[in-house]
Image 1: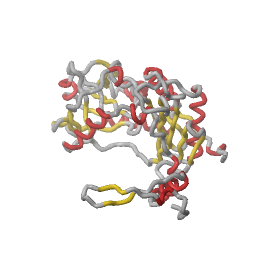
Image 2: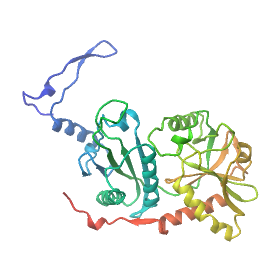
Image 3: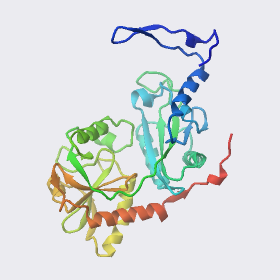
Image 4: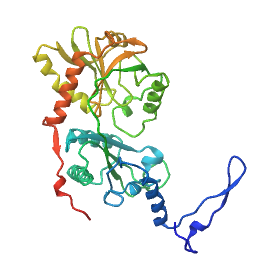
Amino acid sequence: MGSSSNSSSDQKPAVEDEGGADFRLPVYSSGSEVLAKLQEKWKSVEKQPYPAMYSSIFGGITLDPATMVIPIDDHMVHRGHGVFDTAMLMDGYLYELDTHLDRFLRSASEAKITSPFPRETLRSILIQMTAASKCQKGSIRYWLTAGPGDFLLSSEGCPGPAFYAVVIDDDYSQCKEGVKVITSTVPMKPPLFATMKNVNYLPNVLSKMEAEDKGAFASIWVDERGYIAEGPNVNVAFISKCKELLLPSFDKILSGCTAKRLLALAPKLVEKGLLKSVNTGEITINEAKDSAEMMYVGSGLPILPITEWDDHPIGDGQVGELTLALSDLLWEDMIAGPERVRVPYEQVCAA
């Protein structure tokens, strides 16, 4: 912070804290002073977890975490009017980028948000941002919002939509240890909101926290008719005692890209005689709890074995062989499958 006499940071209005003592808050009129403060906070971080961000607000990529910000009047921030999606980054390749991007634009359409760019421009932005980050392993996440403009309910006063994206550096690995889950008591989203990937995740957060409070990893949602729905931010799959792979149908839950990829790859295990069949449909809670094996399915896992549900073991309470075989199928697909897009790190140009 500068020491110039005309700096408004010297103006410190008195504020009374809870203990009754007065303290003074700095008031900044200079953006450079605020930026310096933010950069100072990031200096204490050993490794930058977000090596690059794109924002349509300033129309480019930033590598400085202090500038990775979103306007407070963006309607995604104060009204939840936004959608998002993701893609995993494995060894310099983006996995299922096009599948995720297609779902992203479907979600945006359902949320009545237009894109500021054509699909191919969005795709190019994501690839260029990843290249600029120099990150080889982790994920990207991206948002379309109604944009900044005001603090009203309607987005009518927003000049236009906004697009944000970030690279997340994460040395993730294949999940092979089993976890415990509970049945969530938090009401699940109605189908309109459950089937689009929007930013309204409070039910998901509360469901996850409920599980953690009970010593479990996460939870399972069951619909009002007693059929299995999904986890708080993942799909769920079962292997019956007669070796059928079963997933809940996607008509009332999010259409998981990884879950659909699993359904496409799993017939390989049928051909080998390891699985009897692969199906989606309605699964009752009793049928689910009577399964031989159970798992979460999601982009960052891609499979997470579940060995205990509501304090009762699934099958023999151990991680199942077929669960691990399905996990291997997805992991190998992430490493060398056809659903990958190479990131051209060599083409990065600085501004």
